Image (cartoon, rainbow, N blue to C red; front, top):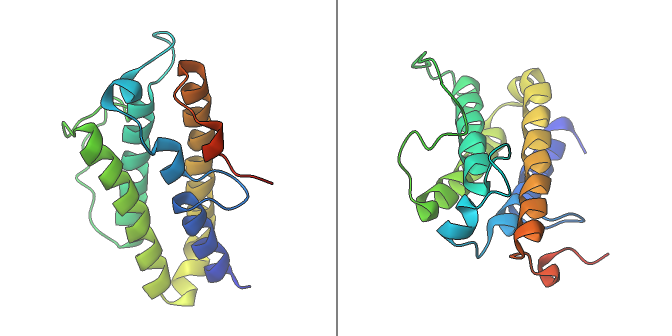
Length: 151
């Protein structure tokens, strides 16, 4: 398996369960109310985490594609700066990962090798926050243990 294949497998794992729960599965079936729930003000809600992932996934995808940055100062990456509904945020999150997968698939191997560390960190970042989402769902009682991966 070469670098490109590994990175594509990592992107796939963000969308579909492998031996751990995917981001897609972690937000499946959540209502907007559940997504906005917080155990305290010091903790980010699931919606805020998804906003944060959208921001970084899109920022780094644009860099990968050599799209110029708007260079705006960001107050917080956790804010819903585009006023997305919960449904639209879930769709944008999923589409963003799918777009990453397409770009990696279509990129030449040299470009993928040059950007491999960034892409690998991006997928680790996604899985880190997926764990937070599952933990929040368990705290609020919205996680169905049947949705987890069976070993």
